[in-house]
Image 1: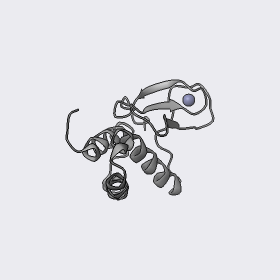
Image 2 (image 1 turned 60 degrees about the horizontal axis):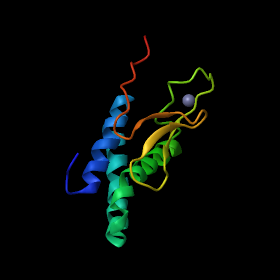
Image 3 (image 1 turned 180 degrees about the vertical axis):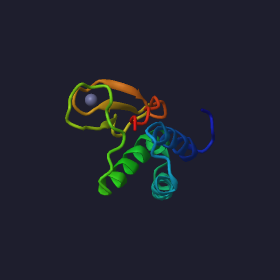
Length: 121
Ligand SMILES: [Zn+2]
Protein backbone atom coordinates (compact mmCIF):
# COMPACT_ATOMS: atom_id res chain seq x y z
CA UNK A 1 0.00 0.00 0.00
CA UNK A 2 1.58 3.28 -1.00
CA UNK A 3 -0.22 6.11 0.64
CA UNK A 4 1.66 9.21 1.73
CA UNK A 5 0.07 9.20 5.16
CA UNK A 6 1.28 6.36 7.39
CA UNK A 7 -1.76 6.84 9.62
CA UNK A 8 -4.15 6.18 6.74
CA UNK A 9 -2.25 2.99 6.00
CA UNK A 10 -2.45 2.04 9.67
CA UNK A 11 -6.19 2.77 9.71
CA UNK A 12 -6.78 0.55 6.66
CA UNK A 13 -4.78 -2.35 8.12
CA UNK A 14 -6.40 -2.22 11.54
CA UNK A 15 -9.93 -1.88 10.13
CA UNK A 16 -9.30 -4.83 7.82
CA UNK A 17 -8.31 -7.00 10.75
CA UNK A 18 -11.25 -5.84 12.87
CA UNK A 19 -13.58 -6.64 9.97
CA UNK A 20 -11.96 -10.05 9.51
CA UNK A 21 -13.06 -10.86 13.06
CA UNK A 22 -16.50 -9.30 12.69
CA UNK A 23 -15.68 -6.33 14.93
CA UNK A 24 -15.72 -3.39 12.52
CA UNK A 25 -18.80 -1.65 13.90
CA UNK A 26 -19.39 2.06 14.51
CA UNK A 27 -18.00 1.82 18.03
CA UNK A 28 -14.72 0.12 17.13
CA UNK A 29 -14.24 2.50 14.20
CA UNK A 30 -14.49 5.40 16.67
CA UNK A 31 -11.97 3.64 18.94
CA UNK A 32 -9.62 3.40 15.95
CA UNK A 33 -10.13 7.09 15.17
CA UNK A 34 -9.26 8.05 18.78
CA UNK A 35 -6.09 5.97 18.63
CA UNK A 36 -5.14 7.52 15.27
CA UNK A 37 -5.62 11.02 16.64
CA UNK A 38 -3.24 10.31 19.53
CA UNK A 39 -0.66 8.73 17.23
CA UNK A 40 -0.90 11.67 14.85
CA UNK A 41 0.37 13.86 17.68
CA UNK A 42 3.05 11.30 18.56
CA UNK A 43 4.20 11.08 14.94
CA UNK A 44 4.45 14.86 14.71
CA UNK A 45 6.95 14.72 17.60
CA UNK A 46 8.91 11.83 16.13
CA UNK A 47 8.65 11.51 12.38
CA UNK A 48 11.07 8.58 12.25
CA UNK A 49 8.30 6.64 13.95
CA UNK A 50 6.32 6.45 10.70
CA UNK A 51 7.44 2.88 10.02
CA UNK A 52 6.23 1.79 13.46
CA UNK A 53 2.94 3.56 13.66
CA UNK A 54 0.68 0.86 12.23
CA UNK A 55 1.88 -1.70 14.77
CA UNK A 56 1.41 0.85 17.54
CA UNK A 57 -2.10 1.77 16.43
CA UNK A 58 -3.01 -1.93 16.37
CA UNK A 59 -1.74 -2.30 19.94
CA UNK A 60 -3.56 0.86 21.05
CA UNK A 61 -6.83 -0.48 19.63
CA UNK A 62 -6.19 -3.87 21.19
CA UNK A 63 -5.64 -2.23 24.60
CA UNK A 64 -8.73 -0.05 24.26
CA UNK A 65 -10.90 -3.06 23.40
CA UNK A 66 -9.32 -5.11 26.18
CA UNK A 67 -10.38 -2.38 28.63
CA UNK A 68 -13.93 -3.10 27.43
CA UNK A 69 -13.38 -6.83 28.04
CA UNK A 70 -13.20 -7.53 24.32
CA UNK A 71 -10.31 -9.62 23.09
CA UNK A 72 -9.15 -8.89 19.59
CA UNK A 73 -7.98 -10.66 17.61
CA UNK A 74 -8.68 -14.10 19.05
CA UNK A 75 -6.34 -16.91 18.09
CA UNK A 76 -8.20 -19.48 16.04
CA UNK A 77 -5.20 -21.52 14.95
CA UNK A 78 -4.58 -23.36 18.20
CA UNK A 79 -6.22 -26.41 19.68
CA UNK A 80 -5.65 -24.75 23.06
CA UNK A 81 -9.12 -24.55 24.61
CA UNK A 82 -8.25 -21.50 26.70
CA UNK A 83 -9.26 -18.38 24.80
CA UNK A 84 -6.24 -16.31 23.95
CA UNK A 85 -5.38 -13.55 21.59
CA UNK A 86 -2.78 -12.64 19.04
CA UNK A 87 -0.11 -10.06 19.74
CA UNK A 88 1.77 -7.66 17.54
CA UNK A 89 5.46 -8.37 17.00
CA UNK A 90 7.66 -6.49 16.99
CA UNK A 91 5.99 -4.18 19.51
CA UNK A 92 8.01 -1.30 18.12
CA UNK A 93 9.32 -2.00 14.66
CA UNK A 94 8.53 -2.13 10.97
CA UNK A 95 6.47 -4.88 9.28
CA UNK A 96 4.33 -5.83 12.28
CA UNK A 97 2.82 -9.31 12.38
CA UNK A 98 0.16 -11.01 14.47
CA UNK A 99 1.70 -13.74 16.56
CA UNK A 100 -0.12 -16.27 18.76
CA UNK A 101 0.53 -15.24 22.36
CA UNK A 102 0.63 -18.92 23.44
CA UNK A 103 2.54 -20.76 20.73
CA UNK A 104 4.50 -17.88 19.21
CA UNK A 105 3.32 -18.92 15.74
CA UNK A 106 3.24 -16.10 13.20
CA UNK A 107 -0.38 -15.93 11.99
CA UNK A 108 -0.43 -13.06 9.48
CA UNK A 109 0.95 -9.67 8.70
CA UNK A 110 -1.02 -6.81 10.21
CA UNK A 111 -3.84 -6.03 7.78
CA UNK A 112 -3.86 -9.60 6.43
CA UNK A 113 -5.85 -11.57 8.97
CA UNK A 114 -8.08 -14.15 7.35
CA UNK A 115 -11.81 -13.71 7.80
CA UNK A 116 -13.22 -15.76 10.63
CA UNK A 117 -16.51 -17.45 9.89
CA UNK A 118 -19.18 -16.39 12.38
CA UNK A 119 -20.15 -19.15 14.81
CA UNK A 120 -22.96 -21.35 13.56
CA UNK A 121 -26.23 -20.34 15.18
ZN1 LIG B 1 -2.91 -19.55 19.60
